[in-house]
Image (cartoon, rainbow, N blue to C red; front, side, top):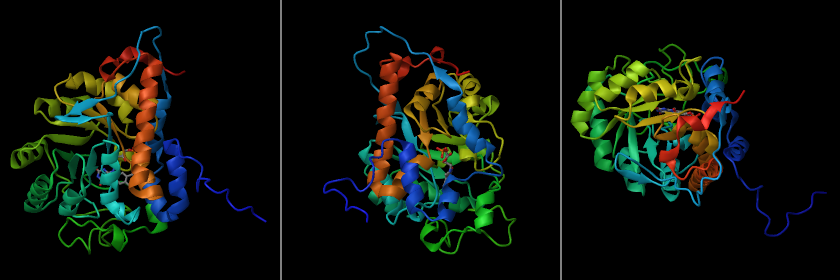
Length: 369
Ligand SMILES: Cc1cc2nc3c(=O)[nH]c(=O)nc-3n(C[C@H](O)[C@H](O)[C@H](O)COP(=O)(O)O)c2cc1C
């Protein structure tokens, strides 16, 4: 006989780390949805490298610095944030929680974090604007239909987005083999609300090559730097290019005043693409402080956050981890997952003997073995 739970006992063990939220998401999500969330392209080497790049680095703490407290605040494009951790854009939050992006935005705002809303959101930009109580940016997949593209950007600005993040690493979707095996296609509660005919599209177009997961044939593969410059003049917002991993591309972005968001799409597109952290020192040197440098992919611990900042990032972003929180506990789960990472970042600074983010320098990081 199983004993009844003790009165007042929590319904589950305390969730302390992002890994705990992963475990909780595993318990509630159907296998095909969990595979869509956690999976990557092909052999998923890049998914693993993203995390391993952090594990291969050791921290070199300084002692007797007289540091009494730490300050994790930072400012990005005029927005003050309590911690240098953003929410990376992830599609279709309706797959993970009935309140979809509304829960994400509310959970992020409660943690003081900035949310990047995907082109493939389940809610419309107007619903997102109404639900948002904190800062948010809009992530754009440039559509072949440029009038629709401009309309999306202007709707996002009108709804309250304060920057435009143009994803540049997805001319086509990667080979998502887990999705192919599961026959995964977006269900009706995950359909993108912002695209024309959203209820019927995109899912996987049967006439397209079977890439698996979300492949929208309306995404324009032929985007160039001049498109980003034109979009900036259309919306008047700061623009970042998401998916840069090369120093020459980063230099090109910086010359145009376009922010650099280093990413390989969480290992979901080009398998064996370099981990952003590995490429960060060269990119940071090429940018030389002219524009902000953000990094995502594999950030799971506060020590990862400080390593990225020590090597030249201005902030990091997380994708899967806050979706685990969303799936597990809705808005509260998002807040709790982000707060866990924030607490760990504070602790890492204190133990490193570093008072604030500006004092994170490359000498604090070395090879782990
Ligand atoms: C389920 C899922 C959906 C995603 N959807 C988008 C998207 O719509 N647009 C985009 O630019 N990136 C998208 N990404 C990539 C994330 O923005 C981010 O680059 C990546 O998740 C970071 O790696 P991490 O999950 O290891 O933190 C998605 C990632 C995941 C896991």
